[in-house]
Length: 296
Image 1 (tube, rainbow, N blue to C red):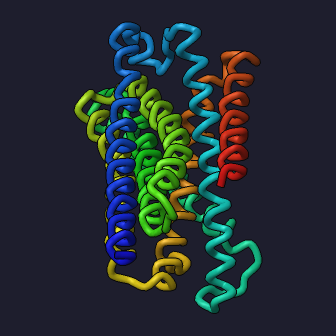
Image 2 (tube, rainbow, N blue to C red):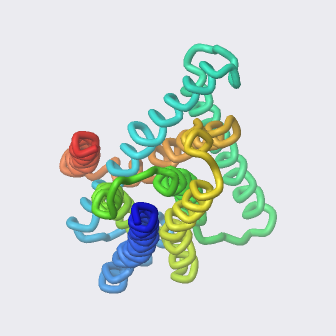
């Protein structure tokens, strides 16, 4: 009888994880596409298309700065601390050299790697235009924002994997844990969709990027649940491997570069109001992280 009750409880927990992950993915996708409604209403001007100057309403411009603060927090105070923690655990296990600030070094390598690729592609575009006399529409924003999507999606995959591996005493505990994660992801999804919507990227590309970012968490949860079923508790609780930690560090550095070079700099002439909006976005995420840690 007790075994039947335990199996029933385990089934409810698995079902709760699956439903929560599916709802989180669908909600993230819908929220990421929501900014397209604003761009349909406030079209980009011809001046912006040629000179990268946008006649956006003040409210939209402030929202973009708010989103920049959210994504900056994600790179510096969400992704990178996780990398530092995992690097220290791997160093203690003897899987990585005991080099000081190794996690931060991996972060910097990712930063400069994307910096080099960014400059190389910009130079190649200039050379192409000089040789052919053709003027392409600016694609730098798309390339940089694709890096943002890839970096965030990679990190969300591991967050989903961790959520799928975690055990819970009740189905209610699963919903509570996923609710805290959902608030963070939905805010980031909206800010990411907002950047994509105002970047001159075609709608099919925006939908594809939004779908990828939304789907990685349910996929990660599914993988984690499968591993939890076939692996022991000790194996499931292991620190991520060297390749995963290095990749997450590179992704964090890449995201930080894009935030400074593309997202934040776009509004650098807009005055202190936009600086304040960026700081508010950063501060909101700090408060959210503090509240989430206390709940856990």
